[in-house]
Amino acid sequence: MDILCRIRDIYRAIVEFENMFQRRYGLGLNEGMLLCTLSKSGTCTSGEVASFLGLACSNTSKVIASAEKKGLIQRTLGNNDKRQMYFRLTEKGKAQLSVIKENDLELPALLKIALSIN
Image (cartoon, rainbow, N blue to C red):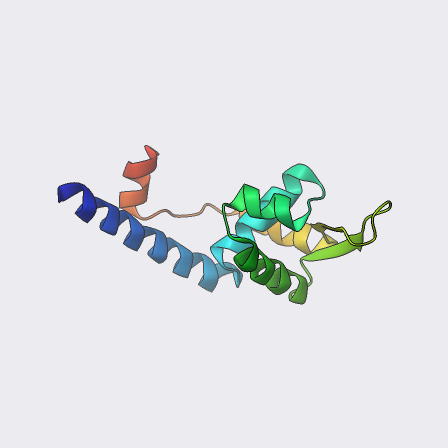
């Protein structure tokens, strides 16, 4: 039972971190991870994004739509298959990611311990 209680505490710490992230940057944690993923890969399909983020396709679509609405990413059609969509960061998305990277993200103490970060 102790493990279950620790998992609950870690989950609460993640929620606390996500709320701070949302207030500071106006982004959900999944949107932030989407920006990070696209900055590393350049372009991705929605299926690749889902795999990288560990989300179901329906949740991935919501995250992508939200980031698109904020002007952080844009979609392009595939060259060979016009049904295939590719996503990449916009200049606004790159700038937002730079702002996030420039700031120290303060992790709740429990997450620091769980991630072994000092």
